[in-house]
Image (cartoon, rainbow, N blue to C red; front, side, top):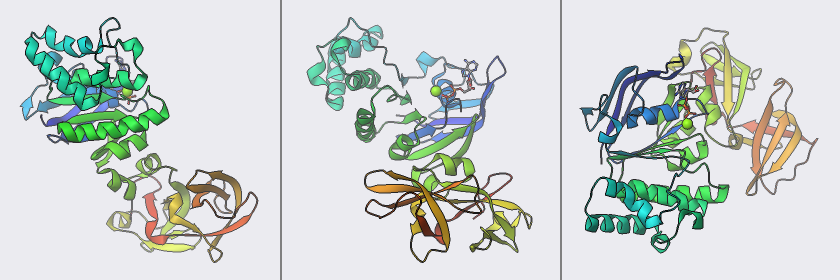
Length: 360
Ligand SMILES: Nc1ncnc2c1ncn2[C@@H]1O[C@H](COP(=O)(O)OP(=O)(O)O)[C@@H](O)[C@H]1O
Ligand SMILES: [Mg+2]
């Protein structure tokens, strides 16, 4: 396996569209890095640049420290797996797995051994003599992964490989992929638009928007201390409450919702001028509904999620915004109730209203 480095990589397509902006990313040997972001944020472009299917406009790509920017894709020794599996319909699973090796003139005994090992790793031994049409979507996706595994590549590049699967199978396959990563000790770059998939899979997660990396770090670090309002709103489900203009900076502190509370700002906060509007953020499970709460809202929507319930409150002073609160599923609460709640002050996130940058 191998390390992969993007060194100040930019990509502008011939039509003028910039899909990667000065990206520097180091992916360690054996690491699983997840690239997550909305559609069009540049995730596939990054994978295609690493694979050599696109040339960067600026910057370098290194594999194991060696500059491969000018090396053609077939000589980079990376395996790509896409959302569409593109199996050969008339070949059996065994032949589908073996085909790439045969083309490379690997000898028959070696092919047989690698196919068997990959099939065992993926639990598809019983399917080896079937044709793709006789497989479920999840089984086909495993064969596509198997084709990558038999090549014993330096790294795996996976572009939304689970997007075609139905939700239950997606979750199961996601768990298997995590196990597979551990078993192969493989370097993997995994692209998804699904933040939940990113959070569960990634040893590290990079959040992309508009060709740039907004934040990169361990999944939980992004969840606990999002670097800006974009990451705050994108990572975590149900999404964080974000209230623009709900508080201001006064005397080095943030005064939230007309002095409901005040929070110390850190150094970043000290550079923001007094009187500046801030964005306050708090996750729905960091708000408690309690009869001695200091804020009152009217219940507009009650959504049972199973283990917990999501309540949407309308609060005077926060026009246009709901306050979303997670409550226990047995909480007695109904539409039009007046509910008192309290924000856990130590869980409040504060952002610069102008730049969106984190301040506490
Ligand atoms: N071959 C291309 N030519 C021109 N523009 C492209 C091409 N491929 C992607 N783009 C543009 O680059 C941006 C990033 O695309 P992409 O990397 O596919 O994003 P993602 O995978 O995150 O959805 C988009 O605006 C897209 O329209
Ligand atoms: Mg894409």
